[in-house]
Image (cartoon, rainbow, N blue to C red; front, side):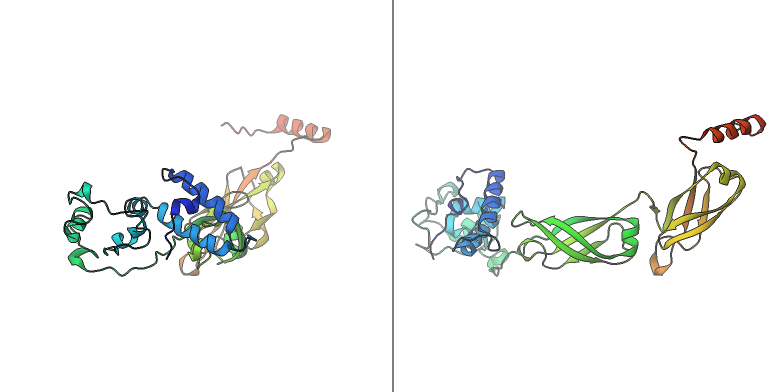
Length: 306
C-alpha cells in the first residue's frame, strides 16, 4: 500500500493550524464531492480527504501521526509497527527522546509504558484492542416551531449544513403533534458521513400564542364599548375560531378561561386556554366619535386612578 502524506492530501504545511486544516478540507471536499464533482477520480480523492481530515482534526491522532508517520495507527492500537513498512523511507522511529538510544534498542513494551502511562501494547495487561472504524459524530440542530405548528405537527421542511461537505442540505421531517420544547427528533443516517441528525425542538412563544406549561394564553382585543357593556367577540384558538363571552366591566389584563383548550400534557390531558383582554382605542377617531367621547368624559363618574 502506498503511503499517503495527509498534509499533502489536504495541500497544507505540517505546521498548519486547526483552522487552516478545516478550511482546506472543506474547500477540497466541496470540489471533489462525488455528487457534484465531474473529476474522474472524485470519489477516490473524496475518500482520501476524509481519511486525512479524520486523523489531522484530532489533536491526539495528529500528534501520533506527526511522530510515527504511517505507523501511527499501529501505535495507537497497541501494535508494534512492521519493520520497513509503508512510508519507512519518509519516517523512522526515534526513541532517543524516551531514553532507549534509538529504534533498535530497548524493550518495546517498556516504550509503551512510558508513552501510554503503564499500558502495554493493546491496552491494560497487554491485550490487543480490536481495530475498529470510528463512528461518525452525530449532528444536532435546532428545529424552531411556533406554538401552533408544534401543536399540529406534520411535515416540516428543514435546512442545515452537512458536517462533511459544508453544503446546505434540505430535508422534510414529520413532526409529531403536540411536540414539546427540548424534545429531540432523531433522523437516522441523515448527517454527514452517515451519522444521525438530531433535531432539538424549540417552541417559540409569541403572537398569537404564549405557552406556559400546558396552559396557553392568547390576546382578546375588544373595543371600549365592549369592555363597558360586555358582549361576545371572536377568538382564535389552537383548534380554530370560537366566540367568547365578554363580562361587562372588563379591563385590559382580565383573563377569560377556556377549559381543556390548551396544550396537550402527559396522558393526553390538555391544559387551559386563557383569553387575555386588551382594550383597544381608535388611533384616528372621527369627529363624531371625538364628540361622543367628550360628552362621556363630562358625564362619567369613573376615575381609573382611584
